[in-house]
Amino acid sequence: MRLLLLALCVVLTSTSVLAQNVDVFAERVSMDMNLLQAMRGEVTIGRAAVWPTSMPALDGIVNNSSDAFALWVRGYYHPVMSTADTTATLKFAENSDGRFRLGRFNDGMARLQIDASLMARGGTYALDDSSDVYALLRPSMRFSGSLFAGSFGYFLDLSNGVRLAGTPSLIARTDPTLGRTLKFGIDEQKFFDRYVGYVQYQHPNFRLRFGREPLQVGISPIDNFLHSINAPMMDGLLIDVPYGPVRFTSTHSLAEGTDTSGAAVPSKYIATHRVSVDPTSWLSLALSDMIVYYGRGLDFSYLNPLAFFVSAGLGTQDRSVTDNSMIGVDIAVRPIKNTMVYGSFIIDDLSFSTLSDTSQLGNNNKFAYQLGASGVFEIADQPSMVTLEFARIDPFTFSHRGMYASYTTLGAPVGYDMQPNSDRMALQLRYWFTPRTYIRVDVDYTRHGENLLDSTGQITIGEDPRFPGSGVPTPVGNVGGDILRGDGDFLVGNRFLRGNVSFMRRLNLWFSSELWPNIIADVRVGYSNRNGGNIPGSFLFTSLEVRVGY
Image (cartoon, rainbow, N blue to C red; front, top):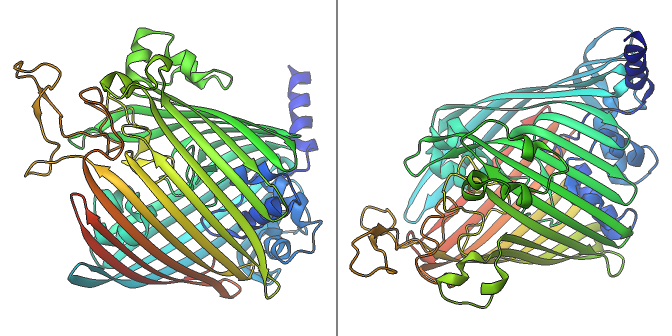
């Protein structure tokens, strides 16, 4: 036993890496740097597919580069990087690397950084002919550090905000992450909180994280099917194993589900696997699988990181009926320097014998796919990027006929932020004046086959069309246009865009800049117009946010 304990101590204290991840809520420069490097050919094209990256991966890049992005990132994270200077005691309220730090400590074995921030945001919104103003205030504190010379890390970001003016449901339309905060968007409380927190063990080729933080898995700069960076956060386990050209990433998370009456779904879990390989620096291939299950404790069949979820889900009658499994394929290619072509394909259900059947017998085939291309250009010696993307989600995809097993948490998609029975053409333009000052323009056009509703706003109920005269009530108005309603998917043939079709055009402008160290300003303007569908109308908003701290 003594020998085992000694060996464990040696492992924990001999590694010189840092066991934290970058903070994607507070800074996106490292994320932008990673994507630009992948497109320029400085790293493999698949390098940007899993985010946030670990501090060791970041440390090795920024400490050996004179690029402006790397210099900014090194200054931002310096107290918790390998090049940080040691301190004899905990230092309070000092300037370090050109930034104000509330607290800093590093004795070679343990590191700690404490930061504080105050966010103030105000703006206007106009829904059709009515308009109003809104105001938010949110103080927060952040604690990050590591132990055992960096092998064991921790991160905690606590914030508590107050809504000073405005209607929560309309403010949420200006910032989707607010709408996916329980106390703000769902309970519509005046005070709302948010936390990011995890502990992590890190080895150069292994990362084990338990807790919650934003997560993106996929290559698209706009949005991704497997895990979206804008989805509600979930508490869970992350295993990430990058080794040479191969990378294995596994998640198992507790999701928050609700039924059609708004009642909580007990014990809902979402697990994902992704195996990627970059056979060359310009090509990346990945295979993934996902599973949603509920109503029981942790299922060890799905907790197994090497399980194939589709087969595990078919292993018993109960799992086969209640659980929702999917598989996906990703590919990214850099045909020439400064370009990227990518695609994703998701199979929710598949029956080879009915692939070409347009009747309800063919409804067991549910797919989603995404095709895009990006290019990087130099304008006035600064990088700019253009991305054009098309995404389509077939009717009932990501939902489930059991309704509780949809690929969602807090009522929002875990992946791409679009309802099934929809397609979207999106264009994104970005220009960096400096690594931390940029302008971004997003334009998209979305078609959506919405469910047919009655006068009370509920899905139309009628006689089962498969059994005329039976009088059996069924959701005949469900055309597969709501990710939370997968019931009734075999009533009639699931023709794409069947239902009450809406056409939405959106334009969003975002300017962000660090005016001075620790002082960040964000200006946003957004406009959307929806024709047809169940709720046509237009929405216009403006937003000015100032953050002092981080």
